[in-house]
Length: 110
Image (cartoon, rainbow, N blue to C red; front, side, top):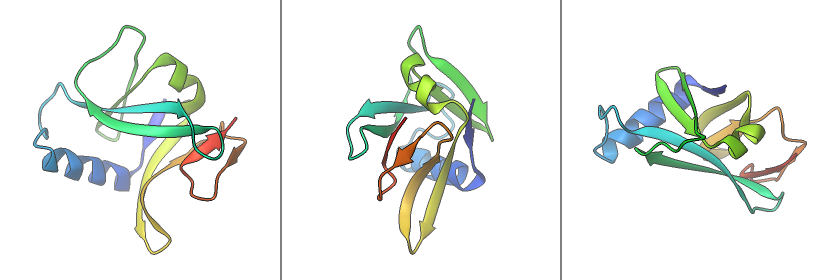
């Protein structure tokens, strides 16, 4: 399962509205893990409307989240959050599988 906080839900809805895809049932939030970043792995977020055969599909807090099977191995029980405070603005992941994260919080290692 991938969880979505209330603040992340609000921001996802706002971004979907800006992208003119709000209310279109075939669009969802795709969360992926890609190689890169100072810790070795980075998170990637996109809106998508095409599912793939090995996709893992979840819905939490009214947000449909899809991830590929390989990324899911890194993302299991992760919470997507959003912060707009003074210490940084953007999406953040609370990932219990990460053994370390970088200072910017955008990459991690397992």
